[in-house]
Amino acid sequence: MFTPQYTLTDSIVQDLTLIAEGKAVIERAKILPTAEIRLRRQALVRMTHSSTAIEGNILNLRQVEDLAAGRKIEASQRDIFEVKNYLQAMKYIEKITNNKKKVTEKNFLKIHRLVTQNTLPIEKSGAYRKGPMYVVRHFYGFNKKVVYTAPVAKKVPALVSDLFSWLNKKETERINPVIVAGIVHQEIVAIHPFFDGNGRTARAAATLILYKRGYDFRKLFALEDYYNRNREKYYQAINIGKDYEERKKDMSLWLSYFVQGFREEIDNVKAKVQALSIKKIDSSLPQVFLDEDQQKIIGFIDQVGKINIGDAISILDVPKRTAQLKLAKLKSLKIIKQIGKGPSSAYMLT
Image 1 (cartoon, one colour):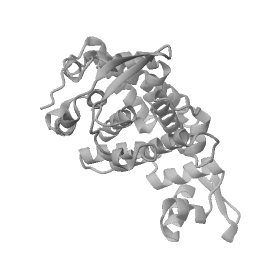
Image 2 (tube, rainbow, N blue to C red; image 1 turned 90 degrees about the vertical axis):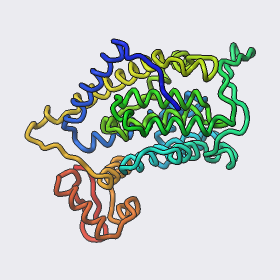
Image 3 (cartoon, helix red, strand yellow; image 1 turned 135 degrees about the vertical axis):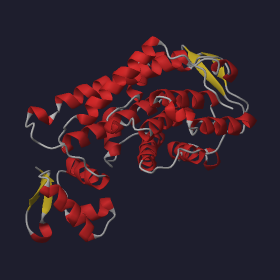
Image 4 (cartoon, rainbow, N blue to C red; image 1 turned 90 degrees about the horizontal axis):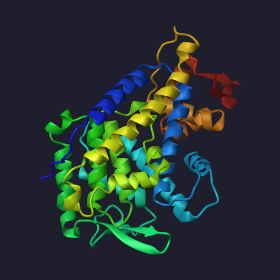
């Protein structure tokens, strides 16, 4: 049975306290819906860019943003697939965050399948590896060194099953969500259950845990940025042993790194949110919470400039009457305004 070993040091506890304080500030902040949509999209783009860049993807932030907006770019097919795949995985994560079901091994395999589709053979995508796995580092482009030996393939299914059994225990619900996410991240990388895509799947899974346990911070953070800014430090932090038995002895150093990085990212989010607070404009304005369909509408307008009823029907996949009601609600909130009349009418941000 999986039982993670770690010590909550003073620095970890202090960072967890600051994260909780930042969470309260971010959740209470009044932000114009259009500004929140932009911050959320930027976080998704940064998250996707950094998580794929860590694994060698060479697309820049602007190219990732173009792909997220559905625009075509000139680049290698593999790099494009990796970015599109991660974006799809994050959409799936948002979808299952909204249900009340527990995170399962089936969800985990689906994330890996989404992350690696079109880049791995079908039989290896969303399936555990059948052979040995070694993590090799290159030094000066010539010398290679095995820095980690993963568990033998036959042990992988049981190890992953043990991880999810621990994750869904009642006792685990009492552990701080940031610690749980860090443990899941480390354990997936330690098991290295797949032929490829382990790092991206581990990072996506950690995000899912945070979202599911109420630590989504309005989906404005991108922890992967912290890893990507200093990849060497990330590798050093996560490689806490030369094999699985050594790694599972103590996760404290990794968790210290993970929690510190999360605290720094939340500090950045808090600063952005406070800078955009509408209290500076009009403290009488109410807090506005938009549902998923309304967010899609605003996101489309922010990208394209305007939206008509046909666009709304298409992106929401709803009947015409439902789309009209969604647009009317946003208009009543004075978030969008109508331009033109009749069949040629459209809506823009106010």
